[in-house]
Length: 381
Ligand SMILES: Cc1ncc(COP(=O)(O)O)c(C=O)c1O
Image (tube, rainbow, N blue to C red; front, top):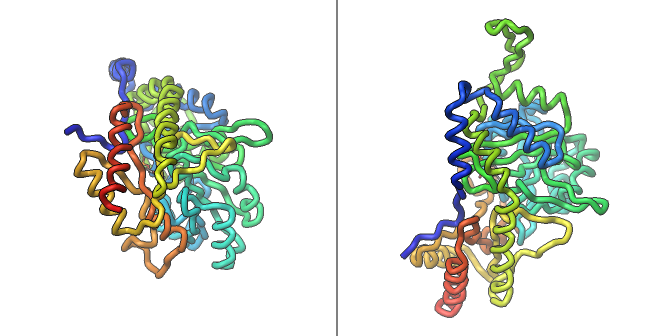
């Protein structure tokens, strides 16, 4: 039996050739490929400034350092989340407030954000970090209101959302254009829309932030003369750089992004059509305003609990299919000190599952997955 993962990269011959070529250059790091990749991303997203870095986690780290997050600063983020942003904020000594989510998308909404603000009586917040779970850029244009209200930055954790876009005043804006945020961050991990092996992107329209981000990713070094040994260190930075052969892979992958997005959409539509007929399942609502990159294909089981969900995961695994869950509420982890339980996060935790979706997923594999699900509901009524 063939094993079907829930996601995987697609590497073409042109990708391999691009990397090979880059490896033959004199500079394999700090060379031209890095800035070429950044220019290409900037054109694609229509954002002024782009910085590559070595992971989505580094991208978030750079974003939060660039706005100077420090001890006791207040940060709001959704409870259903990848752990990167939480870990970074806590490392910097910030106070993190977890907002509840929509029970179907697993995303924070203006309503759950408002509830969180009221519950903790927040007046001034350093940053709000929406996370576009699965790639759906829900409410992307609606966080600016909170920026003004709480004098905060909006940092989008868009690690799932490269290629996602939203309609605003009759025009589509790509996530990462930063039309309604200060900074967007992306991951280029193999399971994401495009990959550089490991990698990340930080985008902004603010020149000051961009300069700081670029300095922070390269040890805080400022070169102010043409004498190669002469430099100053003006800020405490790190080595978060993406190298040239990764950037060459990024360029080659970005050349194929429309093909990747089209295939993901095709699979999502196929799943939607079939699964919407199964009464025990609720598929995600499709929107004309928010176009997802379909990084994940999330479904919600009706009347499920953790026990039934685990049974489903085991059943799929036994039949060669890995399904995943994105994500366990942060407040359930040992590192979370406190007592928190959020109603919709619990519902989402009990009912949501991500099915396999990736460029090379064959039609017969999609059918196989769908038939397995159908059979599950016959066997385990
Ligand atoms: C929502 C989200 N944020 C941040 C990250 C971190 O990205 P990376 O794995 O590239 O460090 C991920 C990675 O999966 C993610 O899904």
